[in-house]
Image (tube, helix red, strand yellow):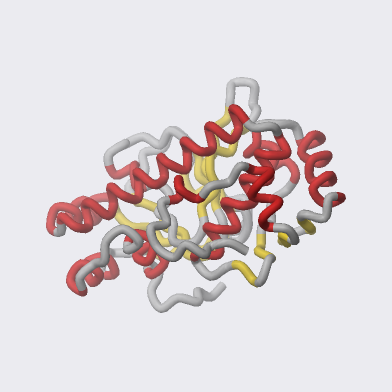
Length: 249
C-alpha cells in the first residue's frame, strides 16, 4: 500500500490549518514527531476497549471506525475516520481506552507516542491549540451523530451519513466525480445508524430506486446531491470547515 502524500501527517496538518496557519517551525515540530507506520488487514483492531494505549493513531490510508458493544453483544459504531484524522488524540489524557478502534479494509496508520505529543504541545502553544481544536471537532461530529440517530428517521440518517462521508473524503481528495470508496457491509451501516441490517437494506433499496445513489461492493455514487442533502437535513456547520465552501458533489 502506498501513500499519495509527501508526509504521513500532511492531511492532518491541512485539517488543523483550516483554523489557523502554522509557522514553518510549528509544522516542522509536527512532522518531526516520532512515528511508526503500521499497515493492517481489514477488520483489524488497532485499539481494544479497556486497553491502556501509549500512542495516538492517525489514519494515512483507508477508513477506521470507533465502536462500543452493549452487554447484549450488539455493536454501535460511534464514528468513522478518514485519512488525516487523529482518531484517539484524547487518549493522551484518558489513560484507558473506553471504546474499540477497528479498520474497515486494509489500512495504513501512523502511531505517535503520547509523551511526544505532550512535549510538543508544551513547547508549542499553537500546536496545543491545534490538538485541542481537533478533539473539539471530533466532539462536534459526535453531537451531530447523536442528533442524527436520535431524532431522524432511518432514510434521513442514511442520507446524512453519506453526505458527511462524501464531504470529509472530498476534503482529502478521495472523491472521484460523484463516487467514493466506502467498503461497508449492510451490518456496518446498520450498526452505525442504530437499526437492523434488514431495515438498512430496505432503506438503501429505496434510495437506489429513487435514483439518488448507487451502492455496490466497495463504493458509492451519489447521483442527486441536492436531494440527498435535503433528505438528510445535512448542514456542514458542525464540520467547521472554515475554508473552501464548495465541498459538495
